[in-house]
Length: 165
Image 1 (cartoon, rainbow, N blue to C red):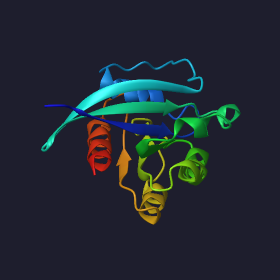
Image 2 (image 1 turned 135 degrees about the horizontal axis):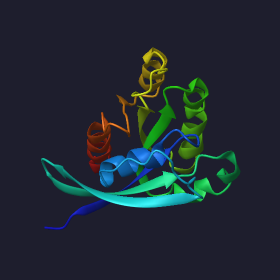
Image 3 (image 1 turned 180 degrees about the vertical axis):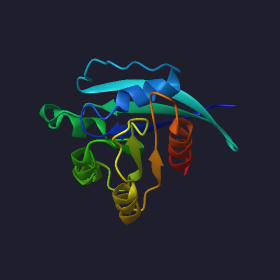
Image 4 (image 1 turned 120 degrees about the vertical axis):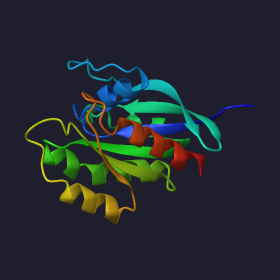
């Protein structure tokens, strides 16, 4: 039986924890200090769904503004995008609408999930604003901690389910 390969994208501002979140789940390890992603980074992870296995090709987009001009070239072929923000940085949530627009210009039928990362930190904000944004765009909302692993499996399962549709 062949395993279906699907492309998913992680997008959001720099330093919101996209790479750490991906590695926490796919490699089972947490690194508190990371080197900034340059352009795009790639990971793969196989997820078991009731209808069979699906292999996620995870594209980790660089969040810094200076990479904005190159990012649209990496979006084609993706089926689902995780819009990731840092729950301690309100501006990273405010920027998600721009990230969504950037992706929709290239992949008009893209599906989305919204991920509030770093919920283990004490200064985490009230999730209602993020939940409201997710509801407005018709996306599921998840809260995660790359450090503790909280919520990460649910994020990847949701990506797999949405990508398989």
